[in-house]
Length: 561
Image (tube, rainbow, N blue to C red; front, top):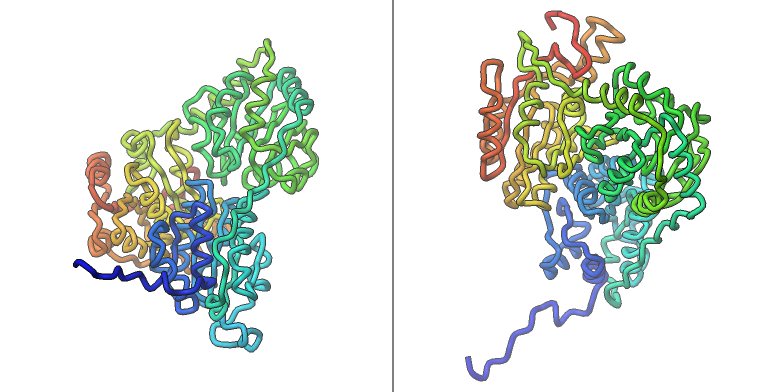
């Protein structure tokens, strides 16, 4: 209308408060997505997010789901995942994501509401002392005293989460502080770059690799961005590559230099095959207890063969194992430098390579078996291996069912694996939702057990709400299977607290709005999976699995219960 005066938004009339300065700081640092369960203790932040469409806010159904989504997003992007939770109960619900981020070396920042500043220390409603509660898990726990400092603290939190060994940071937000005046977004703090590998040290590594007759390369989470260079190094030096716990996607599983997965309950023969190595080069791994099979290979604290350990963080070196050579460097830079130093001639290693890779190939060969009490889950994994797109993102929950995936699924060049190194149940479905949101054109496939699904499967509602389309494959054996297996080993026949009475999961999936399918002993597994993979929206496949075939390496005794 002619002569009309433009009406400015309410935001333009308001002085900048700490909540808006926080959100502007996140946007300035490239944060494009946050996960949350809304809470009254940080309403001012939600109000600021309303004014910031550049940040996609995902409202979840439980703080553990929101936290897991943020951890998964961090793994996929390499940037800190962001989760907001309300004070007290919300913070405690999110704690499992903090532990997962710490165990998995994933950068995560939890912004958590707090009681107002005048009420702190008085056991006020929903008050929690966050430094005392989370101090052992998080890299840094800070409570903001003055809203003017919040932007700088947020910038520092993002930097600390991604520095050294990545991990979780907690920022406590007293409710009244969020209304303080603040100057605006803080300048991004640079993440300190790891030192460049010292040329002389790289040259020594190259010489040792060239002299070794039976070298072995063990790679971990830090190599996620260096997969192409890793393959070049393995091929140039003719060195077999073993992947650390739940990191099978780091190296093509059908490559002739693949040495297998160093996970839980690997056969004793696998370790016997690897033990004759006369040099171990470990890159991007902290050499934890699972990867080293209880600190037996490499042996801790003094390895039985020379150990060269390369990690981006000083604190990871010589922490559990005394290394012959310890190098602080980003794996990408280290591998690039190692390629430059590659020798012109190497010892004949055909026998060593054949023995190591031959056993790894033998492990992944599926031989169909039948069970009287349901579908052997390995058959589903074997069918999925043939049908899944090459660039699929596989998310996985914790539980015995996951051993079938670890053993029989084949990861190629383009596939991604998101699985909790922490062993936390409930990770699978939220991680699949986060992955489907981040990569809407890639097929995201979640493998989860009945126990894990009933912990966080409610996040299927989040998937439907935001248009994410993961495929959930649910192993339903009416049991907490991992614990049942331990019971049978340590207390035979004395089953206690592991039997489950489950709902009709397919009907539940339909109630959420997912296309739902069921696989039983008489069903065409491949046919059902093709239908589920072709679904345009979220899908759920309930697999009525055998309890007797409890894992990929063990079978329960024949008993009635």
